Image (cartoon, rainbow, N blue to C red; front, top):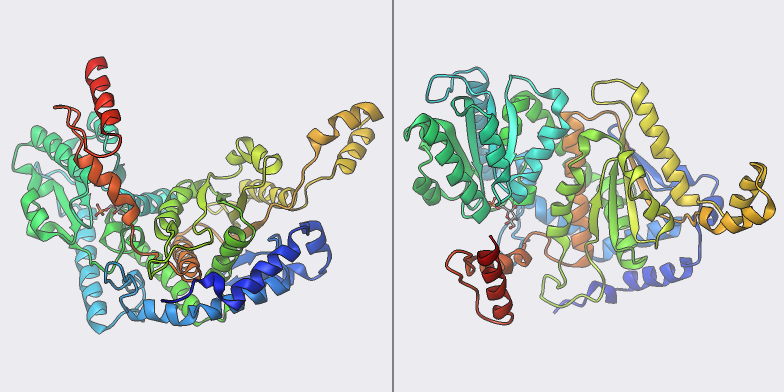
Length: 540
Ligand code: F6P
C-alpha cells in the first residue's frame, strides 16, 4: 500500500513552512521582495499569471515544486497523455487531450478522432448551408441541446462566451434540468419546423436527459407528425442500443469514447451545438488553443508551467493554509458560466476522500468552487470576502480588451479588478482608516468609533490571469488550463480525478421513489420520505 502523500518529507516540509508563515501578512511578504512581481509572475502565449498576491515566498514555490517531484507529477502527466488506464477504478484511459492534440494517445485513437471530426464538420457545414433541413423543408434556425452535467455545461459556456463569434444564423438553447421548465419555456416560443434537437448523453441513460428528450420528441412530433423525429433529432453518445431504442437515425449519430469523461468532453461531439453556432473553423481554433496548453503542460519546467503553478497554489491554499473555497471572478461578462463549469470540473474530479488505493486521506481535497463575474460580484458578496471570516482563495481572470475589441469599458473593468486585488491583499489598518476619516473632517471620537467597521484585514490571497481577448482560441486555452490544474491537484492529493461515484447513490435512491403511487425506498429514514410523498399528494 502506498503511504499517504502527507507522509512525504516534501509534504511535511510544506506543513512546517505553512506554520512558519502563519502570522505573515501579505504586506510583509510583498514588502520583503522588491522584485516580487518579477519573481512570481509567468507569461505564456499572451497569458500572464500573476501570483504575487498569494501568501507565498520564493521558498514556498520551491517546496511546492519539490512536492510535485515527490509525487511523480511528470510521470503521471506522461501516463495520461500516453493513454495509460489512469482512471483505475473504472479501468479507463483519460484521453480528452487526444481530441485536440495529435501527440496524445496512439495512432488508432488519432485516426478515430480525425474520422469523427470529419463527420462533425460535414454535418455542421450541411446544417449551416441549409442543406440539412427539417421535415417541412425549412432550414434549421434553432438548436436545442438536451443534456446535463458535462453534456451541458461545456457547450453552454462555449456558446455564451463566444456570442460575438456566432455566425450562420443558428441560435443555441439548452435543456438540462429534470423539472422540464427550460423545455416548456422553449416550446412556447420556438417554431418546431426550424428546430434541431441534439440529445447529448455519453451514456444515453441519464434520467434527466432521457425525460427531456422524450418530452422534446413529443413536442416536435405533436406539431410535425410522427416521422419528423428522424429529421429533427441527432444524438451524441457511446450507447448505440439506447440510440436505436430512441429511434435516432444511423446517419444522425456522433460518437464518443469511454476514455473521455463527461466533464472533459466539450472538445468532442458534445461540443456539436457550439460548432453549429460558431462554425467548424472557429471550433478548430478552440481545439488549437487547448492543444497549445497541452504542449505547454507537457513540456515546460514546473517553475514556468501555468497549470502546474496554479495547481500547486490551489493545493497550498486548500491543504496547507486551510482555505475551504475558491472564488472564480472573471472580469468578463462572457465568462459568466465559467464558475458553474469549473464547479463540475474541479469538484466532481477532486471532491474525493480516499486515495487511488482506497485509503482515507488526512488532508482536505477539492475546495468549494463558486463565483460570479466582476464587477457585479463587488456589489454582492465582496463585503463578506473583505470583512467576513477569511474563507476563500480568489482567482481573478480578465481579458485586456472587450470581446468586441473595444478597450474603454474594459479599462473600467480592469481598473476595478486591479483595485480589488490591492484591497484584498493589503487591506486597510484601523489606524489608516481613522487617519483617513480625520483627514475627511471627522472628530477623533467618531473616527475611533467607526474605525473597526472601516478596517480591512487584507491578506486574502489571489491569483490573476490576464489574456488578450475572449476568442475561440483563448477560451480553449483557458478551459484546458483549468483541466490541467485539476489534474495537478488530483495527482498531489493522490486521488482518482476521473471517476464520480459520489453522484450514484442519489440517482439510485431516486429510482426507488415514485410520487404517484407513493413508493419510498426502504432503509433508514424510509418513514420520512413516505411522509413527504404523502404531503405532496395531499397538498398538490
Ligand atoms: O451524474 C454525473 C454525470 O455522470 C456527469 O459526470 C456527466 O457529465 C453527467 O452525469 C451526464 O452524463 P451523460 O452524458 O451520460 O448523460
